[in-house]
Image (tube, rainbow over the protein chains, first blue to last red):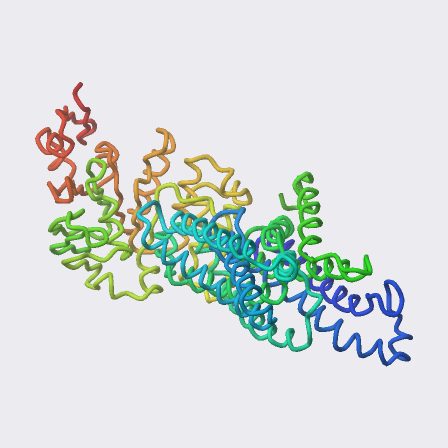
Length: 334
Length: 255
């Protein structure tokens, strides 16, 4: 860490790390049992049900929310850098539409079994990536980035049409609401087992992205330039995208569509710590975790019936983003 | 010494060749200009020298080593490349951008040693961008951006610089800045190969010129030897007037 911007960025990343610990710990005490918002420590000591609730319901959910936010934000930062485009996220290569199609397919034809819905979402997210890549190789237009962008749009639209057909044929009493609720996104059903299934994929994926975060700078350059600096742009880009899609699809498979996180969090992180990917990635991961966990805390405590997480992330995300856009400078960084 | 032997190339296995039977020897420690009209194969040839493209037939050797067999790290310490209009990589500032040139010397984490920082500062000083080092690359003018790209290649410290149309979008003053910079690199013993469609740019700077036309070498040699009415007329398909200014040929197309 050498340059002045990095020093500021690093300091802010540490502040985000401390905030993460605070919100992770604080979230344990938030919930609607027994009181309306806060569960005092004295109650945890005396009430066995409260302890059980925290251990088996609240903790997995808090962990899953943080991992989900961290994954979506990291994947968003990867996609925006690789595609040199600030308006893309991991949903870009037909991935989120693929997940939605897979989940809808499972809801309609596999009687809504939770495991099958998750598997369907994850599998079709990856099929989306594979289709986009395969199609991009056959398009004879522009450079690799443009071809991927075009094929991603085509695959996404194709999936969206498929999901539309599934919605049309779905049983309107049971299946259609299930599809709709899945698409709104939420973590209400998360169990300890779900969390443990999420953990290894996300930890390994984020470890890879963090280890390679300096190389990500190179993938934002022209292919020839990246190659001249010793990179293998095609291979490294594909590896990064596969990992980004993997962490996204396991998260989306468990939680449904949680919108806007991958798009907005990297922007906010960039405003806070700069664009250099060595500082951007850790900051995005922490900020994503904080943001989704904060939204999920609100989803849990504000109303007795839950507000779907995807609605809150979209609503608060856009407000936050608007505030940032209107405020020109943050500290020393533009 | 850089040797190209019977190099053929076509894109994606198409039947029409972009380069046909190119055999030429380029001197180390000199400036060679690849000159020719648009679409004559200059950039393709440069990308073959970089190793980014592989020849369909033939061989390219740099100091006796076949380009295609070099590891990424070896290659990137030997060959630097500056593309035309390098995109302003998201929002990096000039210093961060030039620092990317140190990649061949860094570990996976990108953590710099004092040497790396020194190389960045010295590259910025050489191109006279120290005062703008903290600004985002996208806020630079076209000329300054080109200089920043050259500084990135300078920080890389290769023996061979490949520059694709380094002056094509620049005004007279900025063209001069880039050409003087390349002249200074030559005096440090670096080998420079650049592409240009402008014969006068080639004549002012280059020790040797290779003229390409439709993927074949039309002529190669010193500016005085190859910049004749006949050769340039054949290369560009127009009638030209060649005049000597300070002993170097300059060319104008006749109306």
